Image (cartoon, rainbow, N blue to C red; front, side, top):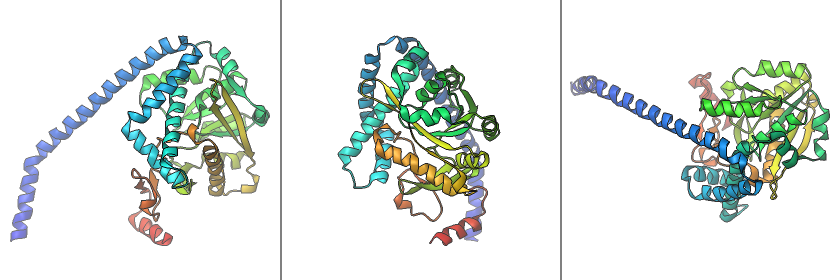
Length: 357
């Protein structure tokens, strides 16, 4: 009787508070939407201001701003700083000091700030400035000569300027890009990306366009150091010794078409110039149909470049966000969570965990 009375009381209380909960949730959604609208208005104003002002600055002023704003970035955004340090601790453990990790993060912020400023600065006299300040070294000969090709880079240095500079030289690519939340900024960036004949395709449903481009002897390009969940075509492979979900699209397109995978990167130099280099090219023949092993090899090359110049990588991205079932939670950053594939049943997930023990 006590249990029945308790359950009945819960139902009554639930019925009483349902309207309250409904209006509370509506208020929270309205507040969130208002916050996003205010944020977008601010972003639109700042982007228009930057487009008007920054292209007129001398190169030296852009470099000075990146140094100052990048240094302030380590002090101000606590959330990003926490993510960055967590990532660096996972990647390097005790092999480098905390002071060294903080220096890498500070330099990484400066790289991100410089890339952002340059996306505005290069909108004026674009071709002339790119020809002057972006230098492709001799290792890029393989990039020039190889068509079709699957081109891979990462959030490392200035990938945006590199792609546009290559297009101006006569080597455009079909680029996969995830739409930005702010439609106005997305339009500005897309216009800049396509200024020299580069084609941008949305991440959603891009495979058909990429396959067609490769069959027509063109280059397709990927930023491959971001999270692609298995339900979206990702595969868990190791990056700095821990599993991350990486898109299988590069490996599968390369195997299917026979196009080699070419790695190309763009790093800023102290004098305001950029150096573009090709680290290596991988032929897909030896991997047959094993896209998982090929994806691991591709990811290893990105890790190699990050290790060689960690200050150029975007450490504030939640790269180790998803933990595959069976992996120890304590080996991943504080922000990580176990990945639950919506296509799998609870029984399959349990069996997968048990199999890894």
